[in-house]
Amino acid sequence: MRELAEHALEVARKLGAQYADLRIIQQEVEEIATKNETVARLNKSSSEGIGIRVLVKGGWGFASTQELRKAGVEKAAKKAIEVAKASASCLPQPVKLAPEPAYRCTWVSPHLLDPFTVSIEDKLAILLECSRIVRSVKGTTLATGSMNFIKERKLFMSSEGSEIEQFFIRSSCGIEAYASKGDDRQRRSYPQSAGGQNELAGWELIQCMDLPGNAGRIAEEVVALLSAEECPEGTADLILGSSQLALQIHESMGHPSELDRALKQEINFAGASFLTPDLLNTLQYGSPIVNLVADATRPGALGSFGFDDEGVQAQRVNLVKDGMFCGYLSSRDTASLIGLPRSGGMMRAESWNRAPIIRMTNISLVPGDAGSLEDIIADTEDGIYMETNRSWSIDQLRYNFQFSTEIGYQIKNGKRAKLLKNCSYGGITPRFWNSCDAVGGVADYVDWGVPNCGKGQPMQTMWTGHGASPSRFRNVDIGMAHRA
Picture (tube, rainbow, N blue to C red):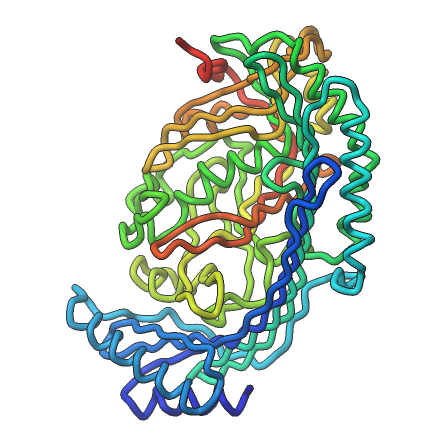
């Protein structure tokens, strides 16, 4: 493969590329899902291909192929050159790349046990046992479960001399319990909604999550929600559990801090951003205890890697420091546009046949000193605790938002009181984060994985991570999801 990659780079150079890079990716995927006590999905697939990116006269070009022979990569390189020349002819200014050293190394994601060595029968046995446990609880109407595994080998090479090989294993698992009565339909998920937990890990993730050990609990909770009181409407102090806060971070910090959105270079699918460059180092994004980072170096977190897809080494970048907006998710070309000395290393592509674009890594809220979830509850006189996302909506600038959760509890005199259903909250992004007055500590901190972040046209999905501890926000609008 290295000889083929070197040939592709040489062809690109001879055809006029001032810079060229490529990725050869081999990927194996396994998807398993159950519905009640039956198998709903069982897919195994693999793919292999090369993507070639070139810079000619200041314009980008990209092409890809699965024909992994000299003739195939030559054809792809020529196509990328043609695209680059066409794009250069209509750019207001030529692309310039922030400097980055050349690397020659190998990186392997942390894992203990390759999930592809575990039999399909063993995997299905766990999911079907969860379904049996859920269905044994009177009042439940549906049980679902899933496991997904990806094994990936990626070779990156560039005309600047980088040669980087990376090996990834990504695993995920989750279960859901449903109950309905009349027009009321409730859902409880574990470990979180939208497919459960996702990590850069092997089979040990499934062992750690103990799906059967939590199936009965979520089944009992979903039945109890049918007779729970509705979330009140008004203003309240709000405590968010870590998985719900992870999605809040994703939508109201992750996407708006993407520099291509802020520069209006990329507004497809998920819109632009209110975090325009004039706000950098001037906007009080949150209260002084709010610190948000993009950290691609966290072991096991889904958005981690050794190097991004233009050969930039993984980093930890401050986005919000002591409440002040101070950083972006950047690439080599966008970093150059706003005067950054180096790319933040956030360029990634969904597969070999997609050009890399700026993507989230692990966008996380740094743990604070408010202790555990129970400590925060004990410190709250009157409020509402919400956990596990059910739905969300946010405007095209990532400014106005509304979320609903699967479950909530009224907090009275520092204790959990009534169970609440159909909980929702909303707000304006900077106002919401400025209302944060308690950030939980490391004891309840979790690196949650989001494997399906969508961006661009053609749309690419990406694996991202969001670390969070339970946190409290004062005087938040709640209950708007069920207004007449």
